[in-house]
Image (tube, rainbow, N blue to C red; front, top):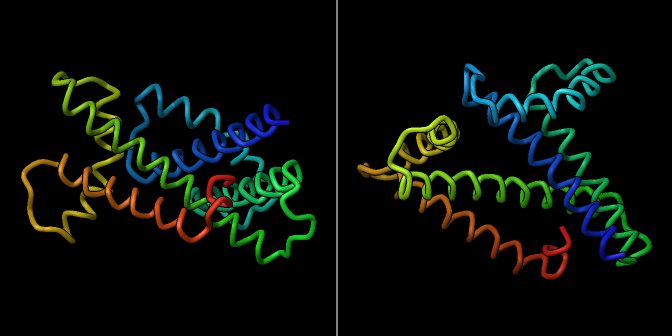
Length: 185
């Protein structure tokens, strides 16, 4: 059962992260010339087109990616709670709230790893590469939002460290508020 639990959790998390990353790529990049961006767009094209086909009201990639990710989190929470037998009867509002919290946690992980790669690539790799340019473009959009709020700093690495500290704070807040459920999500 632990193997099945591990597989279900990681497969759904990978799909959710890739769909959220697709929305982030569409938000930041105008031209998708990077091979990794093309890979993410190709693997998420099928669920997004399927969603557009069945529910044509939503034509914005941001709404579609949020709804697909939220649906995946609901499915993940239901399957994991059934496998672990945590509680046989769960109300609908509880499922929706915990799925939204799980989506926030996945978004936290995505932002954390993008900014961690950004910091490491700026620190260790002094040469410009396609992947470094891709990660920089993804992270600069959020860094520009923080530049408005914080005083001027010469290096974007300090803004990135500040963002990572905020993500750690959110993670520990989730641990304090939800306890063991946070680790299941």
